[in-house]
Image (cartoon, rainbow, N blue to C red; front, top):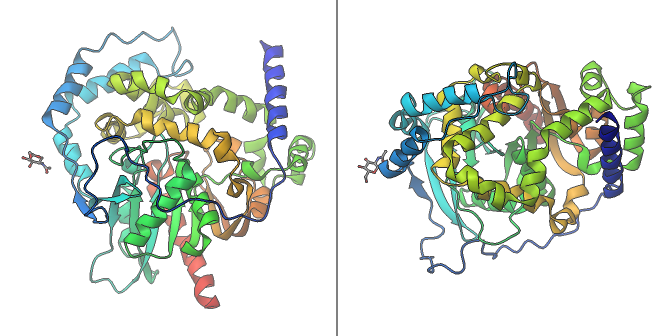
Length: 466
Ligand SMILES: *[C@@H]1O[C@H](CO)[C@@H](O)[C@H](O)[C@H]1NC(C)=O
C-alpha cells in the first residue's frame, strides 16, 4: 500500500505540472452571449412577457412533499452499523446518522423551519431563460449610513441557508462605519429554488454572468462580491470577466492553484527544506508542510469531486431518492470540512452545529430535488471547454481580500507569496482565528467582521482616488 501511495502521488503531481501552463496576464474577451437561453427548449413555451419581473417568493412546500419525506424516513432500511471503534474514518458514522434521522423524523418541525427560512425576503426573476431565486435584504429605511451593494455567493453542498446568520450582521448599521450593506444572495442555478440549466455549459463563469445581470436588474451597476467554495470560484470569474462591475472582491477560499507555474511547484518542493522561499509565516508553513500530509489529505477527501466531475447523473440518483443517503452525503462534508480532526469523534463534530440548521440545508436539496443538477457544476467546471477559457489562468485586477480560515482545506495553496501575484491589488490576507470551510455558517461573526474591515479599507482607497 505504501509504495502504491507514492506512485499515485508522483503520478498526480506529474499530471498537475503537465496541465499547468504559464499564467497569462491578458483576458481575451470571451464569447458569453447575453441572449443565451439556458432554459428548457423542448417544454411548453414560457410566457416571456413578465420574464424581467422581480417576483416576491415565499417557500411553501406542499404537505404531500413533507408527508412523503416522513414516509421515506420512517421506512428507511436499517443503517449499516459502523465498525467497532470507528467514528467517521470510513465515512458518515451509521450510529450518528441514525440520531440525525431520528431528529429529522421526530423533532424537526418543517412549519417552524419554513417560517425561519421565510424570515428573509426572497424573490425570483428570469435571467437568460432560468428562474433565479435570491434573498435580497436592504438596510433599515431610516439609516443615515450609505448603502453598499454586496453579492454573497454560496457553494456545494451548501445553499443560501449558510447566510441566514451573517446577513443581519451586514445589513444592520454598525457603530464606527458610515456605510451598511444591501445584500443579494442568489441560489446557484440548479441549486435549491433556482432553476437548473437544460443544456450543458453552465459553469462558474456563466453563473457569474447571470449574477451580474441580476445585480444590474436590481439597479446595481457596480457592487462588492463575496464567496467561498464555488462561491469563491464564481467571485473570481466575475472579478476577471466583469472588472468594471466590481468595486472589490472578498473570498474565504482564495486559491492560487489555477495560476501556479512550474517554478512555483519547484519552490513548493524545495520549501520542504527552505520553507521561507514560499511561505510567509508559521501558519502557512504548518498548513503546507509536509507536502505529503496535504497531498494525501486531499487524495482522501477528493473522491466525491472526481465522481461529480465525471458521473453526476449516476451519483445523483440515489441521493435524490433517499433522504437518509442525501443527509449522509451532505453532512459528511459539514463534518470533515469544518475540521479534518472531526473524523475521530463519534458525532463527527456535528454537535457544534444546530441540527435544525444542518437539516435546513439538506432540505434545500431534498424538497427541490436538486442534488443531481447541483453536482453537475463539477462536470461543467472540469470540462476541457471550460478549462480552455482564457480567464481561468488570468490574474485578478480588482481590489481583493482573502480570509484564510485555519481549518480550510490547505490544497488551495492560499500562500501570501502566490496570492500576491495572482491578485494584483491584494488589500488584505487575514489569518482568521477559528473556523473551517463553511465560514458564514460556522463563524458568521468572524467572517462578517472581516468583510466590514475589508470593505472599509477598500472604500477608503476607492473614495480617495475619485
Ligand atoms: C402555503 O400554501 C397554502 C395553500 O395555498 C396556504 O394555505 C398557506 O398559507 C401557504 N403558506 C405560506 C407560508 O405561504
